[in-house]
Length: 500
Image (cartoon, rainbow, N blue to C red; front, side, top):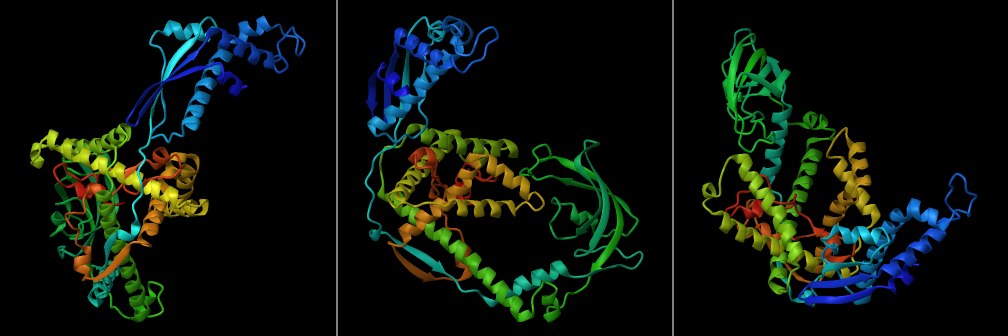
């Protein structure tokens, strides 16, 4: 029935400029009325109305009762089918969903819905650019390789020992020192008013650990059990709770206990406390973990270098809507960070105009790289299996102990959230596909050199195109988030693109 309805439409291509397409669609009043009648006839055997036998409801009675509702469905179905046919018949790949522009005169639309007039509307499309993929064999990148230094293993062991060291109460009257643990009750206030989340009972504080806001722990040096002190500290401007960021608070604090640290001997017994057979086995496990961390860093840097090469190889027209969407996401984060920190563009040695120019360039690069990776993945038939996505959701759920089911249900019920899990998996597979053909040269470096972030590793390194919209292939080519909360507009763009 929809196919038949399409034959009664008058469709005219009114614009084909760059990546923009526009079609004018005319639905005649007589044709709409005929389609309405067809739908109402089909309803006769389905509806049950008091006073009428099944299938014997007069058509005009149905028209009075359901005509407006059915006509609305007729128009909506024809709009949707027209979109689909236009895309199929013209072989179009859309950058974003089509934009439907109806007449501004509401009376015209009302007349069409009421079956008293025709309807004319426009379909505005933005298509993806066509470009030829380059030969991966000509790509050369470096992969940094660092061996695990035994000093790193020893430092890790020392850190674990420090965290698991025993504490014992200090003698009565002995004052606390840096490194001690004090147990406190406290009530936090801003301008004399307690604030939400500012109260704690039996809270252990390791002085010097930096676990509390700056300035808090230092004021607990020199106290003894039973003391009551007032601690004054200022929340960082980047504090996650916006209502507290940058504000000075006072904490009425009761010292309930002071404990001094002992020493945790690093031996086989120490290792057994962590479920290891021996100290040597524990060192092997630590060494393996560090090696994996090095591999992750090395891969990220190789990937960024690869993306730099790809960005230099391609230059094609970008869908304006995708660029605008990407820029708006970045800009919203940048301005939000400034507002939260109480800073201005001048404080970051730049201007709003210069920052806009910088981040617009970043948005364009992200979109370009996203389209390139999406096309490569499409040609190579890269697929992310449902099993891989499920594993990704499980990995994400494990990051929220005790809330695993809630996280799982959230992703299961939100297709867009699932797309965000699928995205980095797809992108990594595409990167692996390219690297399998490209020339990759290993370079031995120290772990200090490996961990140094190069200034060239900027926000633009990471692609950020919405690939489901960019390719109509159901995949996403974005692995990073918008700029980090602490990324300032001036040139801290690298932070803005680091993969989460």
